Length: 88
Image (cartoon, rainbow, N blue to C red; front, top):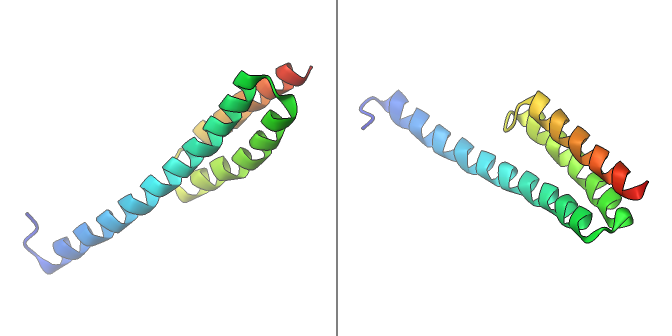
């Protein structure tokens, strides 16, 4: 257990950050899931719209450090590729 005042404060800060990061990660997963569901249903228009909404969320998560920038880019790229293949 934290003994010093600074260690106790650090623990509080970490707990706050963790909650924020959890919420952001959950939000990203929700947006990605919506794209996946649209792809599974075969609706190209819905998939494109969902991707357009998911892309900024993924990039925002990367900017905030919730996910690595390369990971976010890779996810966007792969989703875009699948949406394009569906609409073609």
